[in-house]
Length: 267
Image (cartoon, rainbow, N blue to C red; front, side, top):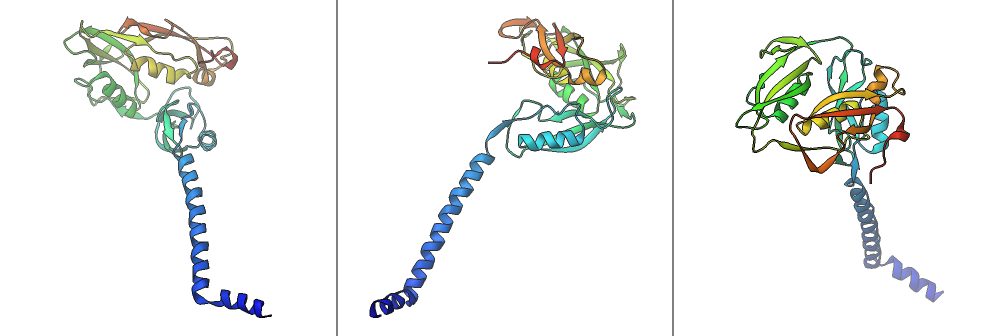
């Protein structure tokens, strides 16, 4: 009995009780910190942004949740023959490396065509002009290179083989050609590898490398316009190379399919 009384007396001491509480709190804090660090480490991992092009918003949201990102519709354009409400463009682009939970901004295809104003692109770099066109819902069609002291400096802008005056109203998705400068000492680039990318993403990458798309060739698996947007590049001519240089403005032919078995596996 005396031993039990001693034990009860020991644990009833206020100093002992406070020490035990402190130990429990420390243990809980340590466990919480470990869990928190694990969550943060997982949260900060890099993931590949999915290609949302031509998906419905609900499909994009589901795909985003599966990948660990989130999507938000912030704008719309009107694309002829493209299904209403489908994703037209995204930022960051497909394949970009981002942190877990990153927001991906979507531009979707509107129900009705809308008119947009042509921006003033003269004096901008090709990349700046391309971004400005996209922000207005317009499409970069061809890069026309002419001799000039500044490579990729926009000299003129054309719509239907005539001057596209700044401020003129055109339908959304209208194609705009850019006449850009080409310095003889800075006139080469390389052909990017766009195999595995969908139609619009592949064309975008070709333009980013100061090249033009000569032709899009679809195989028999591509049945309609929706298929053409979802079709992926399985072959390109010239083939990709980061060592073989080509001239800016050269053309690339893209071969596209819906058959994923034809897509070459990248190392």
